[in-house]
Image 1 (cartoon, rainbow, N blue to C red):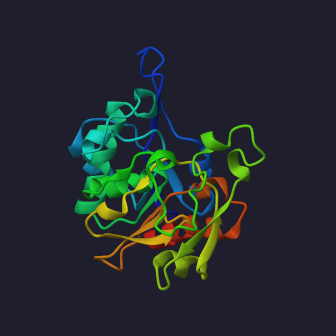
Image 2: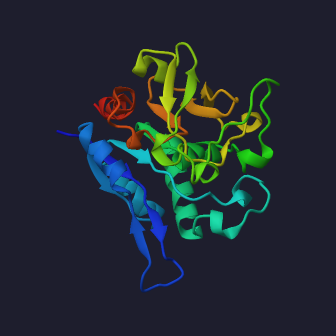
Length: 253
């Protein structure tokens, strides 16, 4: 039987109840299906008991990206409202992530905002804007243009841009890829705060400017728990990024 992989969803046009929608980008759906899983979409609802009941039937989970989580959750500073996700998704995602991480042993893959969500759910915090707040530890390093907004109008706009991610020797992802480096795209303006990595998680991958790009579990080493800051679902024509989704599906076996 092909494993059932749950995916959370983003919300659109919440200002108008007659147009409000819950959506999931087809790239996530196709990446899961292409790796051998069956995608199952979970819309944001407030019934925790119902969610736990559904999770019992799922074999693994993919936490997708989206707008920024509310900074009040981790003691951050105020941000422009346009950057933030709707409260309904925020509260659902936190409930879902905490249930998955703390009440189950199911395999979990977090992508971009989903990677950040894993950290927040375990008590971690974020760098809220890399362009204005991040300073590389090494003086010779410069902050990369992680956000696509910074690359608008250039030849590096969108999915063209790549930067290297260095992986810790012996890490889960290094084992999946059978290498210590991978080229990734980049669509984020926030990142995991190194001084506040969530409970039971550890950083195992970094961009050249020191930004954390990979989180893994460090308590139950037999459990698949992986967060990546980039969007491998937009690079599934490349073997390394296909392998991330195959690893999730294989972990469900």
